[in-house]
Each structure stands twice: as structure tokens, then as C-alpha cells.
Length: 284
Ligand SMILES: [Fe+2]
Figure 1 (cartoon, protein in one colour):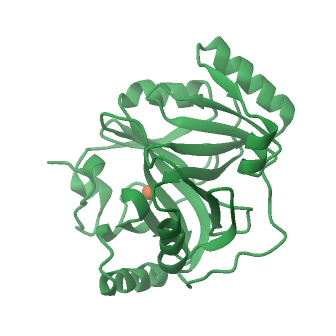
Figure 2 (figure 1 turned 60 degrees about the vertical axis):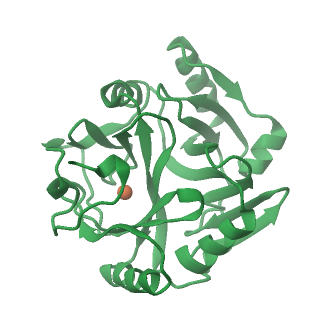
């Protein structure tokens, strides 16, 4: 079993690096940490970075998950290879670009690119927002899946991911007490489905809602409250068509938590009555 201890970063190709940085800093409220070699690093918490935008194909997207130590990385490599999953060890230069001490890359059965990183950098400087969006943490991602039961089995048998709840066949899964660190949403291709930052309160979400409305940023869903995690949320369009989310008040789950099956209905996504304008959340 591969033990994931944290969700670390997204690496996103972009056709417009300047535009992505501008959107991330001026609208999402992330801090630009560093820029160079055709890449820009931004964050919404005290870790080195949460997102690396790099000059490239916007379809080139990777999720970075952390394992504890080099021994665990080697063990993970062996477990994946035994399961028939091809792995690739990152070079020193690639590790430097990911700001970690080492990593391997593999693809999940849908084809989502995942880095397993060891000893990713923390930061000695506290997060200093360029816009006060109230962000407190990079918390979870949606991943696209072409076969939700298959990919659920992949993540829950080879890794320490547990299902917290299902909406239809879509599992919301976590490796710790936070209700979902990844959620798998059925579609016909691979990719990151959305990127979540937690905010301190519902006030931050509502402030951003009006802030985005004033600036004609496309709101995709919300403000609303999820039936599953109980979090209040706002989804909106970010650079290169990626969906971003603010949420607040996510439920914690303990060892005793028993996953619940929700029907694939709009009410399962939002108990307030907001309707999603997101392909993977369409229920009719
Ligand atoms: Fe989410």
C-alpha cells in the first residue's frame, strides 16, 4: 500500500504564461513565488507552491502527491510496477523544477499524470496574498475518469485513499481526515477537473462572488453548499479553461466514517438549489 501524506501541487501547461500569472495573482488571490525557465510558481498557503504554470500544452496537467521518504518512493515504484503500471523516475533537473528532493511519475488507468514526490519544499516565508481572497489552503482536486469504479479500485487498493461518499458512481476520496482530497468525475478523457482552495469563511466566498461578477469572470457553480462534504463553494473559470473552486467549512471524517451513496442529482451537488454549469456535474 502506498501511503500518501499530502496533496502538493498541480502542474499546468499554458499557452499564455503572463495571462495565467495575472489571473492567479490578481483574481484568484495567489502569491507569485518565483518565475523563470518558462514557468511560474504560485501558492495560497505556506508551502513552496501549489500550482506551477509552465509554457506548454494546456492539456498537459499533472497532480503532485507526497510520500514520506525516499524508501517509500522506492516501495511505491515497486508496488506500481508489480501492478503493471509504468513508472518513470524524475531527473535531478526535473526534481529541481518541481521543488522537491525526488519524484516518480505514473499515469492512473484513465491516463491522468501523477507525480509522487518526496520531501517537497516548504517555505520560510508566510503566504502573502496579492488579493485578499481569504485563501487558507490548497486542499483538493477533481480528476477526470473514464471508468469510475475501475479508478476507485486503483486508488483505494494501491494507495491509502478511502471513499468518503459517492455521487452516482463518482467517488470522493481522501487519505486523511479531510472529506475528499481527490474526487473522480466520469467523462471521456483524462485531466484535472477542478482545483480547490479553502477560504476562511463564507464571507470570503461571497466577496469573491461579487468581485468576479463585477469583472465578468464566468461563474460555473454556486454560491452553494455541497450535500457530501457540507462545504460552501464557488466554482469559476480560470486560465486555459480550468475550473477553480473556493470552498469553506469542509467536513472532517474519522476512522468510523461510513461512506454514503448520494444519487447523481443536482441536489447532491448543492443543497441550496444552485445549478452547475460544469460538464461533469450535469445531471440531466
Ligand atoms: Fe471541489
